[in-house]
Length: 391
Image (cartoon, rainbow, N blue to C red; front, side):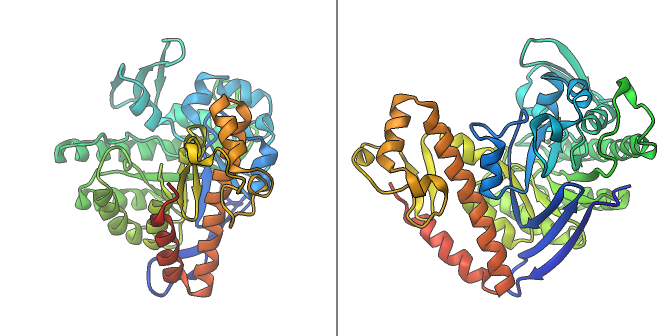
């Protein structure tokens, strides 16, 4: 099992925890630190797969909860799995569905077995358990599978956080057991008649414990004892202060196994990512680049640019003169503002393409700086540029 998944460290920064490495899956290699565009429903919003490939994306996310509800994991499985269904030949990570059940559903009933919840689409009732989450992700055939967890709410009492992390640990054991069962004989029909389309799936465990550092350590110890292909930091960016988030990340990331990828879930701004890389985090995802693009906010090396501002009405400059993306090479701020103010779909497409390229370029610059031994200088220079601001 997992014989096509591996991780190697290539270089480490001498003055911080930053490192660069390489993840290998059956669908290619992923140079880390990496940002993973979020393709919730099998699509990174407003972008074609060709545009993602051109931006340099080596891995994207799919969402277990959403794909389970629509079009259904059995439908995707019949059509050859998620890679084939969405025509994406590079790597895919699927989340477990735990966060969506936590965040989208007020009507949910949590038990030791799993979570009963109401669909946000049509109100129908469904049940997700560690076993069901693994069945769905096996049907999808993603390269990296996330263990089913309970995302601890914030603020949480110490008792609540402890109870949540203990439940997450028990669910992690069940997740690993079920995925192993599914992979033991890939030729045998699995539950609901699905077939295993990717027998080399890797499984990541998710660290919980809210903002209690000793509970984070306890959670990590339990996960390491179970043994996973990678380790994620979950339950952050859910309402806590930035200082609290980075206290957790700076404390727990260096304690995570050095021979495994480290993934900070759902984070975040360019500033957040740079700081987390300096703590030793390898993998990131966030809807921010595409969501902000649809709202008219563009990322540049001199901070955020709000394209709806009247000052850009006659501005024939590109979004960012230092950016080499196809949008900046061809279109002006004035045109992008016109598209946004007119409600034209092309505005979302072009803005999303630029923002994703900005994030991926930033990751590439960090990888180069780590290899060259200039990461601290890069971090200080890049953060200083972002702080100047465009608007």
